[in-house]
Image 1 (tube, rainbow, N blue to C red):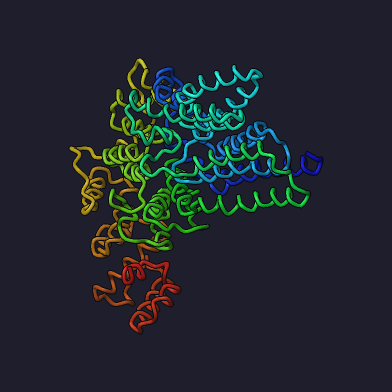
Image 2 (image 1 turned 90 degrees about the horizontal axis):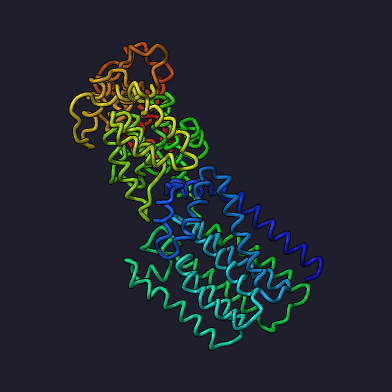
Length: 569
């Protein structure tokens, strides 16, 4: 390669590194974080033995090990970017011809794999398996003796299948291409095809999954074709490097690099989903109880789904702004306050967090188990285990809490938190529980717990308030529930208007004024806690409503009020 070609090649490599790092740490940060939340990596021998005991288990273990660092989006992005650049560098090293055309083509598998990582349930195991497969090719390529090289190839194919999974077929294909011996190539490929067939006799997995790869994608029903497209492209690039095709002139190789960059941008964006990213953002922040950040995110980009709005409503409640700002955001009924298993786009962990904050800890436990069952490859989840440990501490079920905490103590980012609580449980004077769990214990049901009836959630919320009148979260949710159900009479009877030491929240005032008007009381005799500005705005709303002002105009003028929700939702 000439000096301009080397500079261009290095520049595009740096562009891939920087662009993928920024993409996965900023634009797609919560997809990155979600990869860590869908597993619980334990640094124990038992966990290692269980993971590597299936075909592809070793690369899966390495992928899970790296995934634990996705707790922070920036570290996960650096790992993903590093693996993608490493795959490209290894493929570049494998290719016999080193001209610029081949150099540009070696970026294609990394771009395709980046597309896979933009999907909903990818695994880092795919990237680790790809890297180790190419390392094995380089190792065999370094053997000078043709006979020894072919013997080692045939030995490594089943070994790599056990360690890395079905990408052993890529190893066989690349080595066969570079051997330039079609008989040996047929034998190597037939051996690679035979590996899943033999494995189906030993391991209890469907043959299709054994051919595709057990750990290359979390969903095993609809597996994307892109991982194997990347493998086929990698083999094709090696085949091109073995062909006598001319390197091309100056204009040709520059066009090749430009085409790779132009192809990469729309291809990656096509596989990404900003809607999924926003849902994961709200769910992740709710699980970490970053209430202020949720509110900040909502002001920048309003929630669109039931689950997102439910997370926002919880954040508004915990920051003391539910009554003041909830109708400034789109509300679609009580499901945006208390989601259930039939609510579209609801997340088990964030729903469990809502019930936990209310004090309905046993219902929170039920949704924790739903969150675990929703993980496509049936792994554990560190955030879910953390919440289950907290629920057990609140319920004074210390033995169950110790089990969850023990698993978390074997992790990297949850170890300190878990060990602090395990140490408290080992106190000779008896288990000591932090104040946060004691407070939650007072907020929960005191007597016999009962099954939560979603259609009569107000009964459960009232029961919480009877047993603990200081449960402000339950009070705010009861008031909001009545408003969302359009039970203005029950709302007025429940809301302690006279107890507010400052201005009554806006939505509570709007609910009261509407009920006052519908009850036939005079508008000029409103209580003092109704501000004159709000009363005047309600008069304007009534005039426009009676005048049949178009819906679009009503939404523009009053879309942030409870009155608009009451009459138009």
